[in-house]
Length: 335
Ligand SMILES: [Zn+2]
Image (cartoon, rainbow, N blue to C red; front, side, top):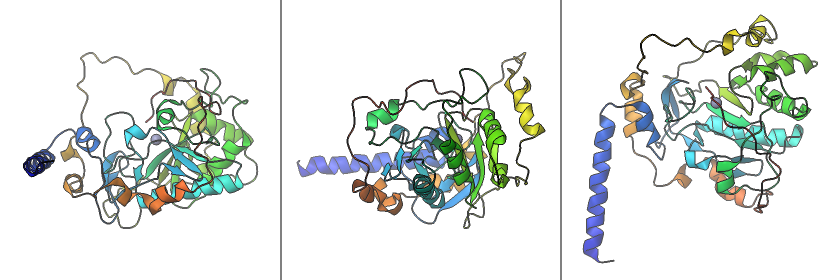
């Protein structure tokens, strides 16, 4: 390439870079600003704000393949989180494979590179401390990128009911949830009320861990792990403590009434949906949006896992059809 062309290219890159930073300096819908960022900030990890209103500095990526996990829906670029969240996912995947008969995790959304609200789905997942894990076990082969977009997770529910399908639910599902709840940093795990009910009816012995298992809408093909605010995040806003009840009480019975499932009445006048602006988030989030990032994602991928995974025991062999994972069910709303 001629050097003049190179120069012009460099200049264009420079100009477009400054145009982008100018946009970031101004207020705007937070989901568009955070949704456009491809890489995290460098430096110490810090969650700013609340799970449903905040952002993340110093995020790292969960490698897309590990010996006991695979990241799904790569096009969303949501395999970023606080390093403690990423470490926890890797640990859970190893422990579940070694001790619970769960061969590996299929990991859904964690957070965007700098957290923040998302263009689609999720009110939470904004501070790098939330992660969705499929209730479908990892198959014994590696998915292609295309399969990771298209394979649908399997619902645990029987048809359209609020109850778990006994033909789908296994002791390994319960063991996986118990394992996830066993870690000190895990504060809450969201599951569909039908799954909570199943645990209430079947768990024997120690039930103290069930306090962390919280019924919520959605969450019938995946569960959602939320960890506590981590040290070094003075602006991270904690959630109220969960108490000690196993939750198999009136609070669960409520989910099996009409009330939680009733449609909200139509408002008389159309209500303009409130859009979360950058200025609605903690002040730190405008700086985090502006802060410099790494050269590439490899630099900020947890534990050089991408390399380690290449030598893992997951064969890079892919059948034409992902027959180990059934393909039903439209995704429905998650929180
Ligand atoms: Zn979630």
